[in-house]
Length: 315
Image (cartoon, rainbow, N blue to C red):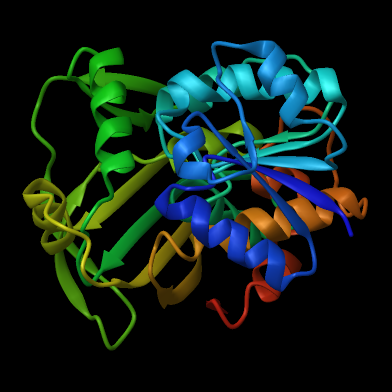
């Protein structure tokens, strides 16, 4: 049985990843910083490279679920490189993803392989078809609500601190930091969601992953206002949200669309990350080193493989 290390295995997303690995026939090796929470497994600290090396003994790959990724990503990637095994993470932190993409490593590294980042990138890549150039990519997140985990809130605080509380967007072919408020507008989602108020330029990891391998002038993310209000309220996570991710690609007067539907944005990160590991280990990749989801995988085929967790439509 193929062993896959899950760093941050006791966290909210980590538990989903462990369960999905077992469902897919892998042997999850549990790891993380808190030995008491692990209840066995392989405790390891990002401040102790030797402990990470011990945790990597005999594993075929690692999935990093431990945020903030500004703290964990680089040390765990370095340990993966020393062990010669591929690395996948579920980071939604824009700055942490930028750090990862700046690396030069021999092993395969796929950051942001999660609901925010990997899914939007795969949808945009699939909608582009054989093209690698577009004028605009729009990624609209229609969530029935959002009750973030403590890990999400902690990662968000780190990102805000790193950018001096400014917001960030990708426009004119580059990242921009801005002081003004997010624009509020309306987005017409596919039925039954319909037209909803959204926050424009609510930037997620998509503004890093998509321009990584596609020549796009503007990448814009949107989030339904209801979900943004839930994020601000930040109470206990007592229910799973339903979602519609509506991706629109425009070039030369042509518009293409890809839509994904599902339930629970945290749970759905597990099949995304585990499918990525399965494809890397079986050689179903198109790139080496550090790569975005749409850059390294066959996007339409990958999206089809996510059923029944995610259903996808193209137009």
